[in-house]
Image (cartoon, rainbow, N blue to C red; front, top):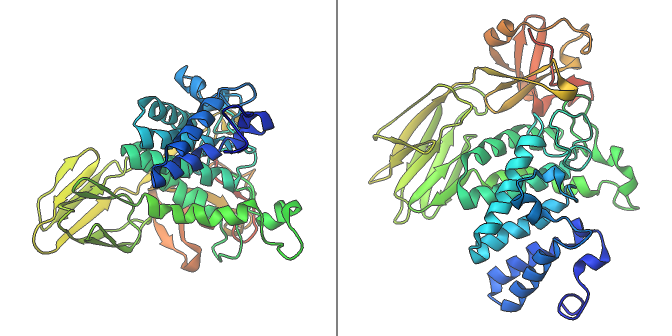
Amino acid sequence: MRKFYGEKPPLSSIGWCEMNLAVLHGFVLLYRVTGKDEYLRFAREAEADVSSAGAGDYIENALAGRAFYECPKPRWESLHVIMGILEMYAATGEERDLYVARQIVKSILKTDVHNTGAFSTDEQAVGDPYKKGNIETCCAVAFDALAIRLFRLTGDMELAEHLERAHFNAMLGAFSPTGAWSTYNTPMDGEKRANFDSIQFQCRPGSPLLNCCSVNAPRGVAEVGEWMLTCRGDTLCVHMYEAFEAEAEGAKVACESGYPGPGIIRIRARGSQKVKRLALRIPMWSEKWACRGNREYAVEDGYAVFPLGEGELTAELELDFGPRFMRGEGDCRGLTCVYAGPVLLGLDASDNPGLELDRMEPIQKSEIENALPQADGERGIVWRAGRAALRDFYHLGETGAQYRTWLRVE
């Protein structure tokens, strides 16, 4: 604050604006914690600086209805600046800031999130989710942090859909299931390599395992705790159904399931003075679903909502895990990816000996539709479709083998 703004140079004068203007986010948070106006004034200066020559001009770009990849600074680091703009809305109620952040997030979901749920191609937005290139772990973590904040402020269910897909594929898939290492690049097709191998130039004596992605990757997995449960007024909303026990605002909820695999999801909950209702998210990917409990529920805005009165609520939810198919464009034209629930499926060379992944005969759609998921020990779930064995993205490539998620399907 002694060095910038007022009669002093702007932050933009030192360059690297997509990184250095990210202090906007920190200053808004300082203002919200302390209430000191000088922090808000500095944050407003930094927000205005975004429109300076050489900066990202994110606000005017979004107000003009353009996609994020069309702004002057579409690298992933810019997302931290945009988190600052969104936090300005939370601190001041300025609707323009909310509009800008929402426009940016929605454009990224449309043009730059891959089938794995991960954002970025070669560390930035390019306007093509099918383009092959490096998909950096840091970029996916940063976009999800922005999406989570927007979700908690707006309750937009499209964001919950994205966050679930990103968690089970991009975030978990960036880790070896052993937990020993994570990736810099987690491609749609290719192989998974440890970050300390693929970006070893960041290694320093005494800390060979530390680099940007190794320290960001655990955050990506832990982000699930920021969106799986939210409180809105007197309602506790459940958005993810892996087995858990939790307490929020004095209310308690527990889930028993084999999620994200098929099967009955069982919920137990007790309310509190503040929490009078429990809302269970009905995923958009589930064409059919069934819900039942020891109390009547109502369907509201994509949730099955139960009252929480005296005693314990017990409920069961069944979802449709039948395969869903998405056709590719651009670099993936003529190919198809397959989902079961929120999970992306693919072919792993180690599961398909004798089959060359790039020269395989097309898999019949009917064989995938008729495949029954089978537990495969510590290697997740496998779907056997004729000669081909498909596996969940988290476990694809864990042995170092090549894998594909864009498939020839007829």
